[in-house]
Image 1 (cartoon, rainbow, N blue to C red):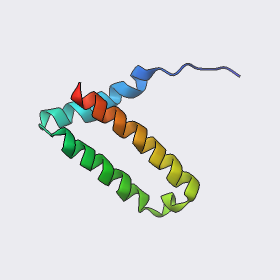
Image 2 (cartoon, helix red, strand yellow):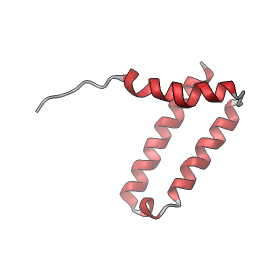
Image 3 (cartoon, rainbow, N blue to C red):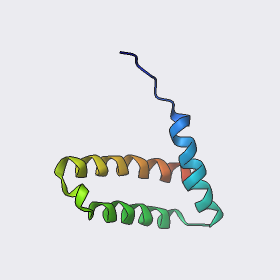
Image 4 (spheres, one colour):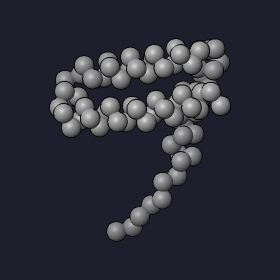
Length: 76
């Protein structure tokens, strides 16, 4: 079984290009981005597919990481 190293650029580059840059161009304050990410997470949790405990936990963990990354990238 072959192991492939994680390449941060292949994940964070698209986040920068598709999320951070357009929001900066729109002059969003960081607080608005934080509120949007929170609302996005909560809306998804209302979907039937995420009512299963395991998927809900994975989604919450994913959004916690992505939100922190986006907020950090946004202020740099």
